[in-house]
Image (cartoon, rainbow, N blue to C red; front, top):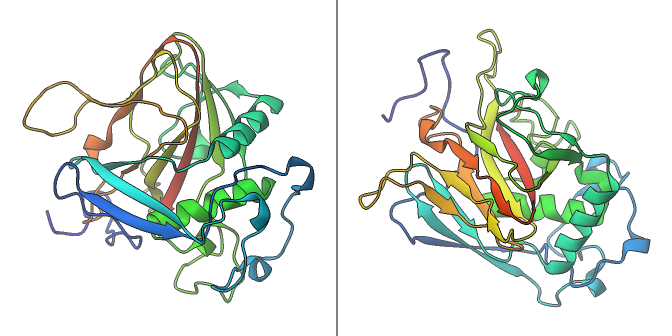
Length: 295
């Protein structure tokens, strides 16, 4: 509409960057210094305990464990538009096989619980038959591989990585709090016939919430390839060829990005999506949710 969000509460346009989606197949190229691990030095990894300012990487600082990573100076990432409405993109080879193996190993060592649903607000989640997977939560500070994942995701979304962690009061004073706008990673496992029926990732904050915070973007990271089923489906995408839903097929290391916000500050109702039932095999997935303007 070109107008600010006004239907429930006066709201400004998003502070965060949104990629355009002008036509199918449109591509955007992004580089990051957060190159891929070709080998994960499991015994050398440790929980990250440095204070906020000590975690800042300057342009000429080496990334941790350089000797175990791809030796190119940068990782090139290509976003390809797969839907204009809603705005959705796929990014191949976002993760290396070694990183995928480390993430799945971490998930298998955790106590995965029956997944819950909510209104995009983690404080109001509940168990339901619409979502039958299991999941666990993993923070950025778990080890250097997960920290790299967050930094790479921040570069992909063109958002300051400092916003994806607890900050010092001197960092980003333009934001009303020092808390991270990125949630913990949700590692999800689907067995045969398990699914998550069509839903939105966003919710609505209480009417008296001064910042009207909500989920802004979702980054899906696929960790394996089910033998059949398990696609991410957008049933209401707009196109001129079919009434069938848009299917995003899981592929090891691939990422899919979509926005829950429109550029004018309204929520995008067309971001309705589902995790289709597993017909054969299993599925491992990561959800990374980014909030606007705070969490």
